[in-house]
Each structure stands twice: as structure tokens, then as C-alpha cells.
Image (cartoon, rainbow, N blue to C red; front, side):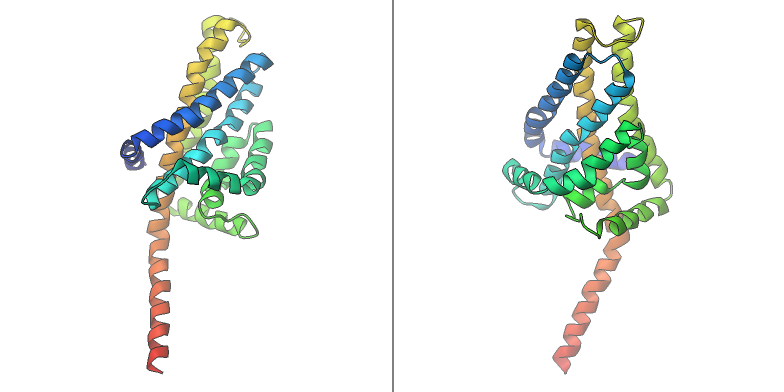
Amino acid sequence: MGEVLDLAIVFIKSDAVAYGKLFLLVIVPASVLVYWLVNVVALDSLYFYIIIMVLATPMVRYPILLYASSAMFDSQPSLKNMTVDWLGLQQPIITRLLLPRLLGAVFILAPLFEIWWRYFAEEIVLLERVSGKQFGPRLRNLQSKLSSEAGGLFFAHLVFGSVMVGSAYLTWLVAAMLFESHFRLVTPETIHITFPFILLYLTVQAFLAVSKFLYYLNLRTVHEGWELFLEVRKCRTHETVRGLL
């Protein structure tokens, strides 16, 4: 897992200008929106604060994931093509990704739900374009491959899950402890101190989206690369036999 995180840093550095644009076009606006919600709703509840933070992560993760995939496989990736892909995937994004996340967030189960049962849901919907009846079997198939790796599932839980929940909680807790003895986020001071943490949280989420994408590629290469080779060899064998006949 550590190698994947290091590789993600190198991967982002190799296309730093594009990721800088994504930071300005995606992460900063998302942070402003969350900041506005905190300010308008005048949150004094950790429960509602975490719900907003959990639901805000897709606004950052999905565009970053689409671009990372484009940067990996396209010779000339572009933000325009990523936007077209994003707009064309709205229905499966809503039905397969956002609604389950919303349901989980209401019961504070979203991180656990995403990690244990839907760890690669984002990659399956956004990259493999699987959203119909094949979604469930494909999700279980990838999940079983993740579970079979020594320590893979544990470290996935530790890194991605704890950062998701912990950073949202830390954002709320630090602001509350600095400015209010009753753990409220309603004063102007707490609102302003919260924004940098929100920006940092969503930036970390973007980085983890790239890291998980690379982990997903590694998992598919290790477990499905041989299967792909066998399928190609089988097709070539059939073509050779037909040529001889």
C-alpha cells in the first residue's frame, strides 16, 4: 500500500499542471460549497457535519478518478473529454454511487458500507462502465480479489476508511475545541477556521482517489492479466485451427 501511495505522488507530479487546474476547478469550488453549507445551516452537530463531508467527497473523487484514468491510457488527456464522460454517466452515478452513499451517510454507515461491500464501486461504474445487472457480480468479483490479498483488505480499511472518517471528525473537533467550549460551529471564527480543514480534507480525498485507482489497476493486472492472456491465446488458437481447415 505504501508503494501505491508513493506511485500516486509520482503520477500526479508527472501531470502537475493538469492536476493544478483540477484543484482550482473542482476541489476549491467543492470546498467553498461545503463552507457555505456549514455557514448557512449553522451546524452545531457533528452528525450533520459528517453527513455533509461524506456526501461532498464524490464531488471531488469522481472527476479526479475520470481524469486519472484518461491520463493513464490516453496519449493526450483533456479536461473537456473528462467533462463529457462525467455528463454521460450521471444516471449510473446517481443510482449506483450517490444514492447508496446517501443512505449510508444518514445512518453514519457510509464509510463502512463503502469499504466492506462497495470498495471498487467507483471504478466499476466510472471506468468499466458497468451499471446494470452485471454490477453486483462484478463488484463481488473484485471484492473477493481484494480480500484474497495478504493484508490488502486490512490496509485498504486502515488507509482509506480511517482518513475519510478521521479527517472529517478532526475538522469539526479542532474548530470546536479552539473556539467553543460547547462544541458548536456557529460563530464566525469557527466557520473561518473550518475552511482550510475542509479544503485539506477534500484535497486528501482527491489524492486517495488517484491512489485507489492505481491500486485497482494493480489488482486487475495481478489477478486478471493471466486470464486475459489465456483468452487471447484461445482466440488465436481457434483462428489457427480454422486457417488449417
